[in-house]
Image (cartoon, rainbow over all chains, first blue to last red; front, side, top):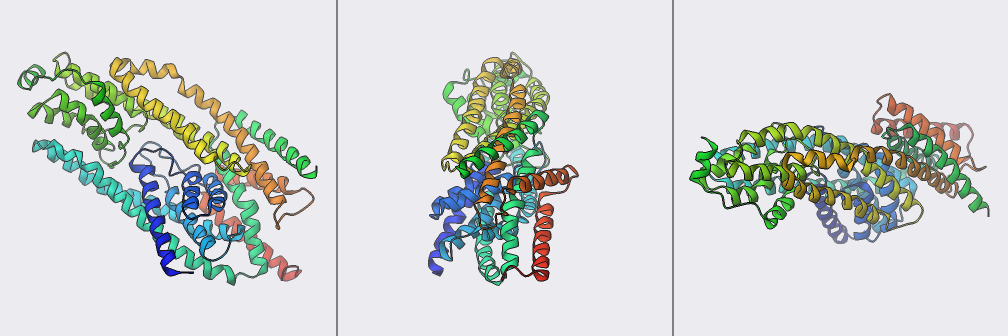
Length: 238
Length: 270
């Protein structure tokens, strides 16, 4: 593991993390910040597209219910997913090809960053209050041109915080992942891999299914599950 | 100060043209940037309105117009395009002395809630899960461009609603409500929920297939049953308001404890 190469990769992760952080709450909301897009994007940048796709798909389901409804501040799925992606992709690039156990440990390590990210979002909204007051003061002073700059100040904060936290989390996560993985004995490693293969997808599917408001949708999901499983079984047998 | 007096002190430069509306549209993409707990998206709304207001007012009248749009505002970022367009149109009328300034404030106050509800329900709760479920199923089937297709599909709707909303809002002012109603986003959202179920079912089967081919496959084709059972258990836990991170740690911890315990009793794994 070359420290200089890791540092360059962390800078890349920071830049990418800052940009997807902006998309989530600051600008565009074009869904680039969704785990399914953001993590494969990071994977492509680090030359690990397939790992990024596999991880992004699972993370997308797990964080599917994180939505900006009204004035509610949900867990920051972008922060948690990008840190999980960052550490696993760095592990894949600098240590060894990440298996399902490594991906699962990465997800487990980064999940608490979702609620932590929510607390940071709340703090950022409190800081934005000063921008709102500055806008009102600018109007009172007949200097409306100040308002042209205010969103950019807020965007700068969002970019910096996401870039710093995602790079830091990925770097620390890589160290923890590299230290923890070899310590796990056979049975624990198999248990983690089993959890990653069955429990994590099942939980992700449960989160996604619980968002469906129409019973017909759930019934159709069940039927499709059975039909596709039979088709795949026959395809595999054939 | 009366509207007539305001208008007479700073004569209007005419109506807002397409170029200015496009600048408003561009700025609407930064609508959520300075969201705050007291007045929510007021800075974003005023920032987006500024190019249009600068065309219509000068001096003190401009300050007053900007102040009108720094009031509390909370809506869906994509649907705000329609409200911005209508607000620009009402501001044109105010600048020309045909309406009272309070009308634009009343319009925004009345409409932000319903528009937010439609946007939240269609975009956040329906189109996004549908697109994501479709793309996850695609990725698991080996379609590597599925996330890109998800982005394109989603943003086709997103940018269309923003753009259409802004220009239609500018054309029709308060009548934008009927125009948005005609798109029937709520009915479309219901259909998307049903289609989401279909893709999630396929995703589940693809996850089971991946498990079958992995070294931790349990054999005898039992993987789909195990995955389906676990999904149902997780759904029941989520319905009981248990948070995803808690369930993740609880189930993974339980899985590790169970397997380590079993291995200690009946050593099978080195």
